[in-house]
Length: 322
Image (cartoon, one colour):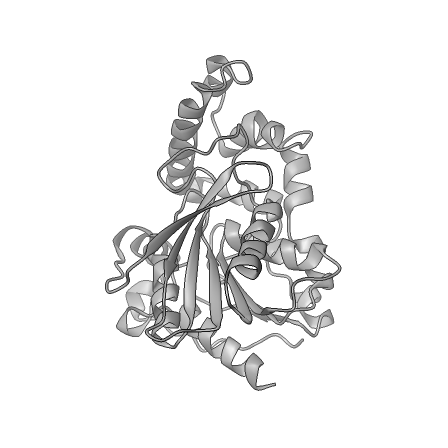
């Protein structure tokens, strides 16, 4: 599919990638949305918490929203989408990954960029227990990688899934990991590491026979974290093996559901490989938009509706007309 030309033109201050990223992550607020929490049991006996919000009238459509690293179902970048879709007659479910809903999960394992088995359980739950005829998927960062991997690694996906949107996607995880370790991203890197290590220390108290305090003390970087915990807890040989196997880039040619990727050219988290021009040109179901601005999930726009949120709704409307 041809590369899409972006129309995103933020106001002058938010042409700065750092400013747009920080503002969106720390200062944005979304009001006027009410969420109900549902806990579901996963295939391996663990649990996930889902945060639901609803259209004003009964809907047969739902959008499934996946957050990024160390996010949760109340972050503005997911509630902003939920509110927009609720206002246009679509229910929304914000998925909290394992351990991200304010309560640690039961297993030693947690979540990671390629944990599509959890997304599969969520979609199966929707099909088993709900009334939705149409399902849309939208993910941000880590959650976006998960969605694209899910869509591309399976021979078939449920027929109810009609469209997907992936925003600020680290399509090649090793390349993105290296970018996060550069000096320009030190503030982001250190913040992520702080929260991840804090949560890991809490988990270690319940799993002392698996993980030692010395191993946690050895974590100095995010790659260290993936080496010490992510890889070992989820069946990978090491961090590099995790990055290679969990990256969605290799699965993009197989996607058969209409899918929009929005990656800003000034997103400091993304390496060159995270802009899959070749894959988009060769797959008629894959649409790639590369705005000049936007940073990492920082597509600030008018009336507190972000550009990527508006584009998600426009994309879905276009797909439904076909």
